[in-house]
Image 1 (cartoon, helix red, strand yellow):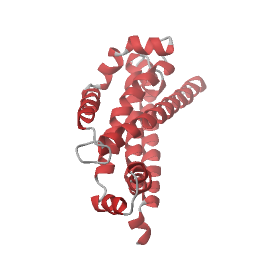
Image 2: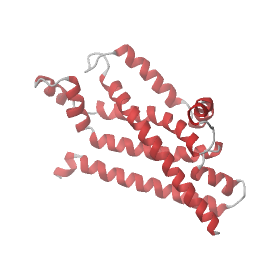
Image 3: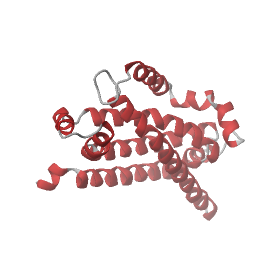
Length: 221
């Protein structure tokens, strides 16, 4: 393999990492409060607003149920409005971020709902406000689950980042399609697949390790 191709693979890997990092950061920062709201705004919960909860839930479900490649095409006008272009790494960050928000929000909701209700009642009995319960009880107890949720989100983003290559999104997916498929270079396609697998394994291993560190039960054992 020529040095030029190796440079292209290196650049594509960096582009993929940049897309995943930016989309993951923005998407999780927006998805976290949405997930907390979904988990705490039902009838009789900390911040009861069942009607708004249903509306937000419907929007989240609608976005999650849209296949990612269709979402990319559907929001091209919005992507162009935000970034000034509809192709390239910068443009790909927009649909990646939008796909991340509802995905992570539902994982956050599930992580919080899995917490023992007795802890919430105990905090209420001690005079804690709903906001204090969220930050000092729910988020603190859900740290291992939230870490795994973020890990799963990043792993999914790596896969999504490869998919945007089909519509000129840049990164490893774009490199695999342009060289591995269109130019019949199976060695390039193989390297792209291997790099993607390595990225997923590194993220998953790091996430699992952090989750174990945050898990009080594993530390006791």
